[in-house]
Length: 285
Image (cartoon, rainbow, N blue to C red; front, top):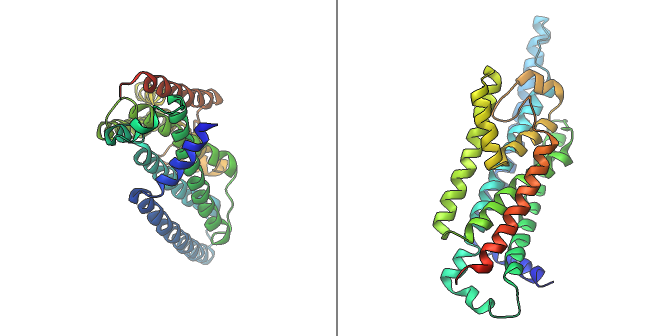
């Protein structure tokens, strides 16, 4: 399949960009600092327990709740970094090559335009999946080795974080067949920010029992379902005790999206990818 050749070339070219290497270096730094932060958390918890024992007070805050919140902070950072890398790695994948004239040498060959779009999508997707799995593994490994804590449903949570990036990748690939590189980056990044803000508004609305604020979050989830998939991932990787204790917050939720939302998000990716193929097929180079 010719799309796989394009995917391999895209994967290779992605690592030649300074942006991707910059994100990787910062991600390694984050992993090291995160492990050290977890170590400080464990030490602080031991001090709290010592004071509780001396005062004869057990308290209501448990270690699992504290460790779960630390894991959520790490996974939230991974989700955000993956989203940023997804957008800026693929933002000019079509538009940039049109401007540089690279595609003029490829398109006349016996290669369908849909194969170019699909190949680039698969190339970026494979890079992003490897990145997310490695980063989630580093967070979970730190929690297990340093904090002696293992979050539940890690595999499901990881798959949902991957789905978040696939949503953004589909949106970016679709945008690059329509807009210039700069315009596409601005539009997709603003939509990503809108989705995050909408999810936060919905969380606050849930806390205040405000239907208007909840509906704003629902509409933003329909337009860009990335944040709703993150909230479902955050719900799954937390023990129920932590969810009940912390309540609605920017890192999690007490009312997770349904499986229908997951199905919608998958369909969202497919439709945008097909739309990108269709638009690029008729685009004048």
